[in-house]
Length: 397
Image 1 (tube, one colour):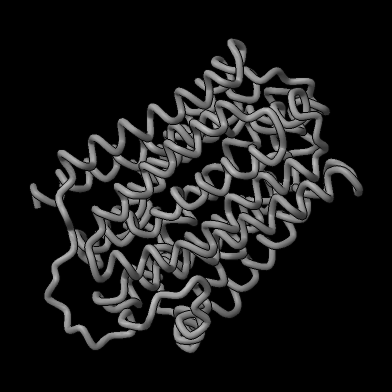
Image 2 (tube, rainbow, N blue to C red):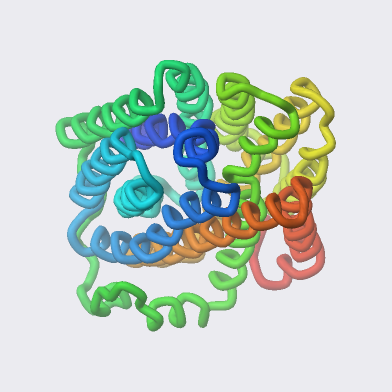
């Protein structure tokens, strides 16, 4: 147990430090595109989406590689690519270079499924929700301090943001190399689904996963949640700049508020909440909170109103994400954690690609409320599925 606690702490620190670098870019990328590169909102959506599209391609690949060769080597390789992508961003002076930096960082960012598989390796099914919450907490804290620091550093130049982001990824790489132990036990038989040939888009693996009704349903729910939230990537910062007249620093504060609430929920409270509420109730309550507060974002009037809405939105996402991830892991065999979680992360990356594309398009051509209303609509569908359909397929108690 003590060994698991130490490993959980180390994987938390690794993901947190890496996500800190990623979080630095969140509030500044839209303003950098508008103010420096002179591109429109839809082009910003493309720059954000291409990062997730690359993750869609590489998450299953890295997940399967980690099932065969271990989690640690894949995490190290991805951290190195992350640092390279951020360095290229620091020297970006045109849209093409920005896209190249996002592609390289997207490949590097495809290790989240491997980190999730690492958690699955070292936790029991009973403690897995709490373990998956560790990843969510690392995300949340990365979104607290990253955007806060990014908003402040942007006042000294966007190049500084790129250098500092690269530095955090290099720090995570050093920590992982010297301190993080390998989690995978190489005791599984070789004749498993993970022995399929690794391809850029392995349709056979997707068919295999979605042939399992439980997995297909849960991964679809995670896709809906991710797409709904991804509609506000980029557009949330643009809303602050263009509608609420926020500075980069104020946008950083707003992201920081959402991040710290999400981190507290996923890192501290999710374990306690799981003891008092069934997974069904958590999914119902969480999807309702997300749907209502996404709809309220464009009508929050001022900084305080938007902060209050963001708090309740973060509570909703904070209880939803680890619960659905835990269920996905629980219905997956031990020998296929990397593959299945990789497929799930790939599908969520695809959702993060579609979300900003639609969000940027809707913001520019339909009006600024539409990205947020789209997310509210789809999480309302998730809410209805959780009430009327999910209990028939998944054991939730």
